[in-house]
Image (cartoon, each protein chain N blue to C red):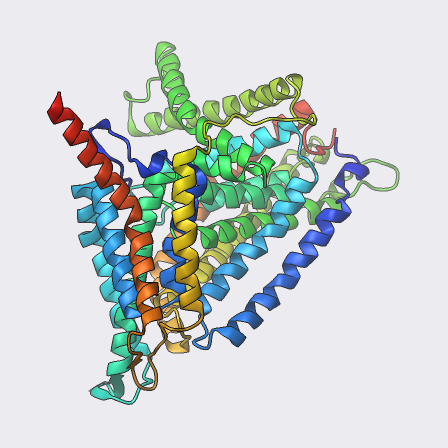
Length: 304
Length: 281
């Protein structure tokens, strides 16, 4: 996986919305392609995921798409026809195993699904930072989210502490960068040993400090950096409207597709096209918000 | 000291855990009845996610103390730091070794929490994905089993004899914290210590190869063939996964050989020094 984020310091607009909306969007975006394996739906998902991840990550995301997602998709597309031989249109015999058109189509659809899920997750990693996750689930699993928050904070702290231990040991003549190979390994091991002991002792001290400040008492409040403002309300309303319409149309089966034993693709009825339009609207909404903000930014700047 | 009352689970937690377990067959039934294409991936994904809920409920339900929370957070942070330190070498990671150490010296429950949260937290760095719940469950269950084998079970085997003294022949080979009860018999101590490390290594190698490899390979197959299930595909994936799983298992054993003794000694020392987590005084 890669880390993607806006270059040039400007933050993503969608990331500025309430964490609930971020989470809701990604929950929808990831689960719809998994649940409803319809070719058109999948193409919309893949296109929007690719567009948004490239918008968020730039060239790095495009390279990730080419170098990781595409091979995985090809592998997935090849996997299906090689191991599944259902379907009535046999086009080739591969070592006495029939390769059917239906399983090729199914493999392609499945590959599209996998590609869009992976790409959505790259966007998720850029938007849903750990603090947002902890904010959302802190009430539900307070102890565990506290552990997550503490562990995330401790990792950079340990990196800094290792530097200090190395410096201190250099001062008393145990430099990790000089001496023979074995000496250096031994000195490096000592650094880690000191590090772990320090980490545990320091942790106990932190725990005692927490206790002294009243951890575990009733009436605990949580720091929160998020508030649900009118902008969030508007987006929530549009998400809810579009998503429920879409899910209603999908669940009632207007957009059904049959892969075996013969690929059958239902005619686009009015309901089905509503489902597709809603799905596209939701999937492209964050990107649209970003682009609108960019346009606004450019127009304001040119006026100055 | 967690007394017997603190250890007891609240009824609400018990009911919730039972409900979650009942949910699993329900999920399977819904999938069979309503999704004719039988999406194995979704079902297994939901089951894996649900099966972690009882562990979380039990952990949250007993309101862990601040010290315990911090020690777990420290172990999670060290494990994640270990995983990031070896980011260049695929599959050669100290995560399972650290999780097993945590389970062995802090108990099954803490072992699960350290395992599952290490997977989750490290994926904030490596990237969350559809594999996250599978990794969380795999690491968690390995830590849980390590705790069962090397902490609680061992504690019941190695109970003190009737006169209260602890003779070497009563000492459990697997129980970590009673090494000092073997007295001044240095050779016996060393023998016990070696045997423990050996047992731990055999367990960790097997657990990594079989449990982690099996779970994550199954997840990959189910993802690749999301609608259906094929034995040949499964076997092909397992076979192609053997080299990677072998690397992972041997990495775990290597890291345990290096880390088990110093890490467990440090943890036992902290437990004894601060009277933590029901350590024997």
